[in-house]
Image (cartoon, rainbow, N blue to C red; front, side, top):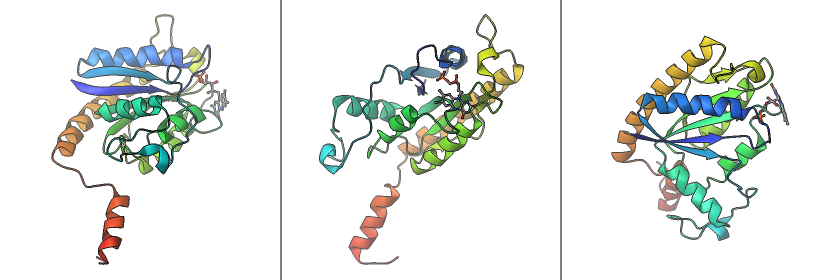
Length: 214
Ligand SMILES: Cc1cc2nc3c(=O)[nH]c(=O)nc-3n(C[C@H](O)[C@H](O)[C@H](O)COP(=O)(O)O)c2cc1C
């Protein structure tokens, strides 16, 4: 089974996330290939990001400013695959979600791992601008953000009374995304096990310290 962490990026009372998350969780579980761990940010009272060299301690197992930050980093570290469910706030991902990603600090826990994404909004764009924002962030965190995503416009009317998407495109997009996520998870779990390059920042430091330029 593939160890999958599902990150939910809204914590509002009566949030639309509660329409989207039960559906996508069911779709993931029904595949029978993922061991699902729901990391709902409403249950993770992460501090506003405040880490610094003094709060890290041992770089190989950072302590952080609060135990919950350490626990959060450990959770992400366990993942072989991730799925981020995000609404769109002001044409980007919610600050809540960005803060949770920032808090994965110096553990490189997203590095070389496949990340799928589901976005939604009450508007016509379905959170697509939040996904574009996520793509910028994913690059720096060295996530492998999948091309095939699920975008849900008009989320308040997007699900029927049984919790299924009204538009068949939504389920079809989820199937393709989850197929990709499985494939990339297998490929990258093997690739990481066969050895990873150290992060680029460390390699640059080593090159400079060696006095060589190439
Ligand atoms: C602070 C804020 C900003 C928003 N900005 C956008 C936006 O830029 N584009 C959009 O389509 N919807 C926007 N919306 C509408 C949200 O997509 C909609 O409220 C959605 O239900 C939010 O998800 P949630 O209820 O799970 O938090 C915004 C909502 C809030 C609260």
